[in-house]
Image 1 (cartoon, rainbow, N blue to C red):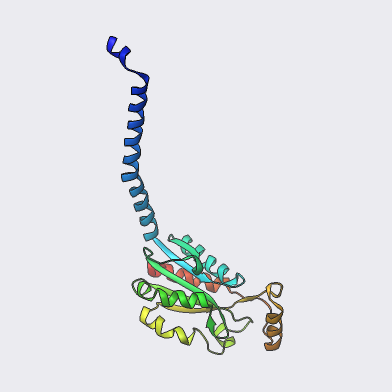
Image 2 (image 1 turned 90 degrees about the vertical axis):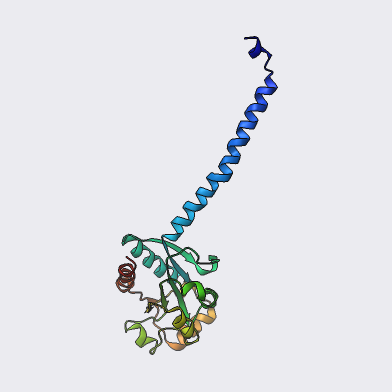
Length: 210
């Protein structure tokens, strides 16, 4: 009893502080490491669905593809290529871009070239969107399906498949110059995206990955 009475409050406080310090050190050493590991494991199970878009139409196609893959039981990460630093940890990649005058958006082309080595190590699917009208998309695009300037990169990556989807033109989102160009070429205005075709394409990807 006398010994207990001799323990000063400051000694008890110091002991509690030291115990808290040990707990914090343990958590920092093992807890955070485990959290990072769990995060890496989650990414490793994901399919990256990446896109480049100007007014959002291609982003919505990417969302539809992501939804179809999720519905098939796969995990996806849906991201704009502008927000992706690297693709390490993903088990497959679906990459798409809106096309303009036969070219992908600059950020999509840059992403494909920059990550060529990493993309060659996983299954990759590519899609483009843009043609408007009721005819077949490739017919509207006069046989165009993929940018010629990127074909060699796609060949080296050994892309599983490439698709061309109809696009959408919302005049309220266009600049004055763009509206003039649309009128000049007589491009049909409206939303011509074929959601059934897009979903079917995504489902075919899911079957290959399962």
